[in-house]
Length: 174
Ligand code: HEM
Ligand code: HEM
Image (cartoon, rainbow, N blue to C red; front, side, top):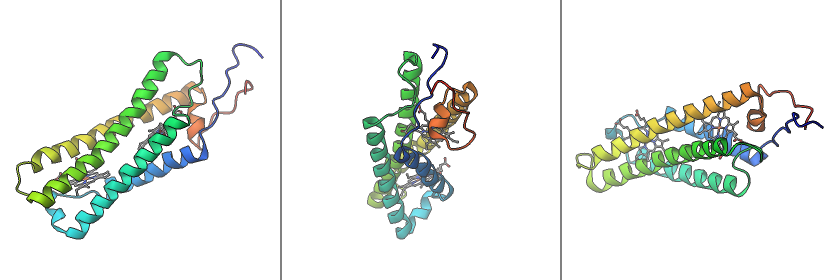
């Protein structure tokens, strides 16, 4: 074995992959069927559904975060430069924070709406929070996908540890 033979990172666990890809389906569903305007919340069944959905979303997000923390948050190998490890950690954390903020601000909208009605002065700021959280999640996910593509081009195995398609061929160092 020579020094230049870099060991391919081990794939993420099946559960990590289910969390990753399953969550994307849930998030896409939420974005597609988003509440149109605040007046839609006059429909009590919709308001209740949104609250349960946001609680489930938050619960799953926390479960996934804890699972990844306890197992292996990144496939980057031991010898990776400290700066790159920090960037990966900060990037992943930013996704969790922005997604969590969407659900929390959504629950704040629901709380203000049901306690004080649609005309209350607090509605505007909580709507702003919700929309900002959505924008932040698009930004962090956009950066994340670019980083994943960067790793695929680099061919260091990080892509293949999580993504089932366009895998690079395993290196002979493995
Ligand atoms: C085509 C789209 C996507 C690709 C190719 C992709 C690829 C990847 C890869 C390769 C990793 C492993 C990184 C590592 O081991 O360090 C990863 C992890 C991660 N991805 Fe994605 N991803 C995509 C979309 C998303 C989306 C939409 C989200 C958020 C909803 C997301 C959230 C995460 C998070 C939080 C991690 C860190 C590990 C974890 O906690 O599961 N990804 N992704
Ligand atoms: C995880 C759960 C949620 C997700 C992923 C989500 C996602 C979104 C998205 C993508 C938008 C469009 C934002 C924009 O156009 O800038 C939106 C708008 C909105 N959401 Fe949510 N939402 C969630 C929970 C909630 C909850 C619980 C409520 C309140 C019951 C709520 C109330 C609203 C309202 C009123 C709007 C329209 C804002 C406007 O008038 O422009 N959302 N949501």
